[in-house]
Image 1 (tube, rainbow, N blue to C red):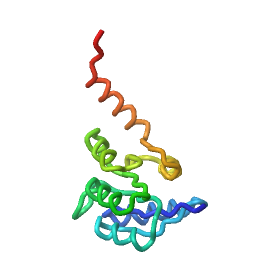
Image 2 (image 1 turned 45 degrees about the horizontal axis):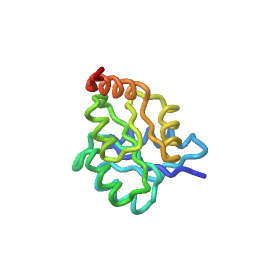
Image 3 (image 1 turned 120 degrees about the vertical axis):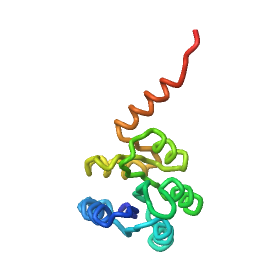
Length: 146
């Protein structure tokens, strides 16, 4: 089965680069590229991707708002955030919006491919550094009483 992917990022070189890199994966096809959230929603209707790779810092709606809108209209689509923002607030906001994954833009292609394959099986994918950060943040907020 071929995984249909839409890349949403306001930087053309990022969109085009991701499309070229993912084209080398035998089970993946980039079916569209969007520069903003409104064109992302339009393209989802047209090309029916299974996965949207979403930047958080987008013009018009941000990636969190766009993820909420995508999932309200297309609940079967999986959204993976690909962002430069590593702060736990960004990660939690995307997960609360319904994103199935979150990776940093400094990740390797292999990790992005793994994330795509993971989310299409209805699982959540977080890069290891983000998982560690979230667990540490959570542990610091929880007090265990004797």
